[in-house]
Amino acid sequence: MKVSYKQTEVQPKKRLGQNFLLDANIVEKIADAANLHDGDAVVEIGPGFGALTRAISKRLSSFTAVELDKGLAAFIRAEFPTVSLIEQDFLTVSLMQLAQKNKLKVLGNIPYAITSPILFKLIDERDAVSSAVLMMQEEVAKRLSAAPRTKEYGILAVQLQAVAKVEYLFRVSKHVFKPKPDVDSAVVRLTLHSGDLGFDVAKFRTVVRTAFQMRRKTLENNLKARFYIDHSVFNFKRRAEELSIAEFIRLSSFLAPKSELSV
Image (tube, rainbow, N blue to C red; front, side, top):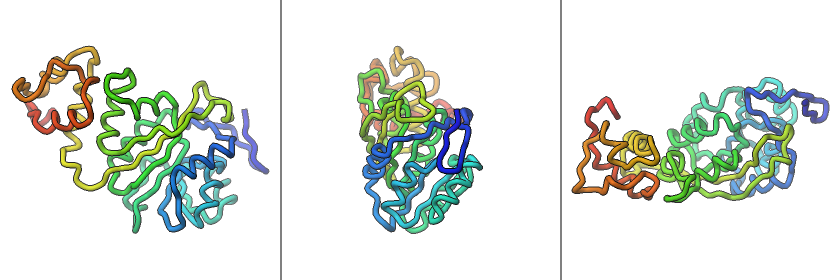
C-alpha cells in the first residue's frame, strides 16, 4: 500500500514502523497538549508526511524535526522550508546539543518497535528535555501511567514515573492511520524532572529490573542473588507490583549490591 501526498508517493516501510496519521483533529490535539509558544525549542520525532509538522508550524516560526527515511526527509525539506531537518536516527541524536538555550519540548508519533528505546533516551537525557507529547501503542501508554497493584504496572511505569510526571491524555483509533495498524494508539504527556533526583538512577534501574524479574516472586526471591537483604529495614516478602514509586526509591537507596559489578 502506497501513501500519496501532492506529487509524492511513498511505500510505507514496515522495518521503520511507518503508519501515517490522517486525522487533522488528532494532530491539533497533540500540538495543543504540548503547550507550544514561539521561541520554544521543539523537536519532532519522525515527521513522516508532515501531519503533525503542519500543526506545529501553525504555532511556531521554526523548530527541528528528525527523520531517518530519505524520501520523507526530502518531502519535509520541500514542504516545510523553515523546519530544521536532521536526517538521522533519533536514537543517535544528542538532545543536549539541540537544547542550546532552552530545554526541549519533544513531540512525535513514535514507531511501536522503538518506543522503549526512545523513552529511555528521554530519561537518560532528561536534563535537556522539559516535556514530551508522544503517540504510541495504547497498551504501552497504559503501562507507562499504571498504578501499583495493577497488571500494567511494571518496569516501564516505575522507571518513567520516578523521573517524570506521566499523563495518559487520549486514545487514538487505529482507523485514522494509513496503513492501518493492528492496534489502537494513545497520546501521553511526560513532564521530565531535572537536576539531582536524590537517588542513583543507574542503581535504581537495576533494582527495579531485578525486582520485576519474576512478577509472582517476592522481592527477596528476586533480589537476593544480587543484593544483601536486611529484613529489619524493609518488608521483602512483598511483590514488586505492590510498591509505590517512593518505596522503590527508598528500597534502592539502602540496598547494597553483593558485587559492585552487579550494578
